Length: 465
Image: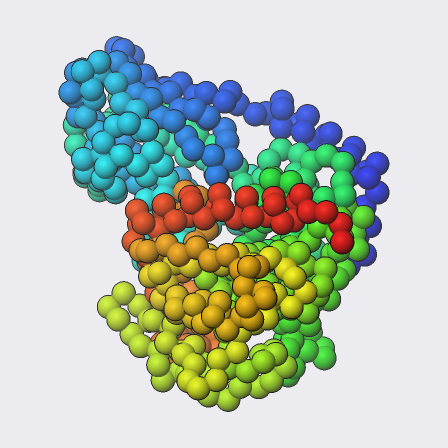
């Protein structure tokens, strides 16, 4: 099916959704998972929900231990051929029970009371570099986690006895009933359509300039009721006529969005944009270009540039490659976007769009202070449209809640070559994202609530204009 020719009838869509929902109802497991416990053990582990959305908290309740018994709880998942693992050490209470919402982890991947620590502290054990990022590529299938409980303190990489109990957990990015449509042709990416009768509020969702496409957030937004276009734009300069245009990505995005808003499952009066990194800059630009965009979420994306209408002009000497430097953790690129005398904000407020800016204060790719310039340079009559939330200790890759934190990523030489801000001598290095695990995790959880509330107020529930 050609993505540019899609005009789905609601009769066909409803029939397909019914079949998918019925299939999921047949295959879906109980919402509560009890343990698989070796014979002779009276202990048990209960995980609720055993099948749930990735932005939904999980309760882990362990019973039947000795009073004050020490155990190690290990979570693991295999994704994209790589194994990710986390662990924590708990001491049972006087009743021989442990609850992740009230028990204190005294050692392991995290410490303290962190109900979802086993998920956001996952790290790769099987890749050449432990900075490998856990990204779900096929969002139509669940992530299958195993939660194991070992006696005493179970050290990583040290052979141990069999677990005394184990539970399985499935985490979903896409609710049963949400439809995914693969786009081919000129526009590349995927569309996610919520279950039910449309038309639905519509969003475009874009990630940064070092990845072709990530569908996780788009699938999750569709699960919250938004028809969402996850747009890939990395290939745009291979399209005839776009090769040498400074505005290639912007024109491509605009054309894709204008096509998307005309689909019969999209309510063209309730439209928004969400973007991370370069996707955030593109989202702000889209609101500047198109009056139909009612709200924009910019997550650690550039919001100021050297010139007005940045996408219309070549900008020699910017980014400043000489400002990019290497640390023992990887390269830091944020100073490459430094601006001197002239600072021009992306005027996303031009048509009255509401603007939410999420800022990680330890971002190593975009200067967190640039968003202050964005707000201060906004005319007073539009300042009320801007909402900025800052998170100390959070890095660049602020994703939906409980996503594992990585302080640096390994894009590889092929992807680094596509970046205008990375000097060739650094193509084989890791690139810093920043952030500290617990602070970053808390930022992801809080910011996701703010994003959903913002979109509900300014996209889903807006009046027509």
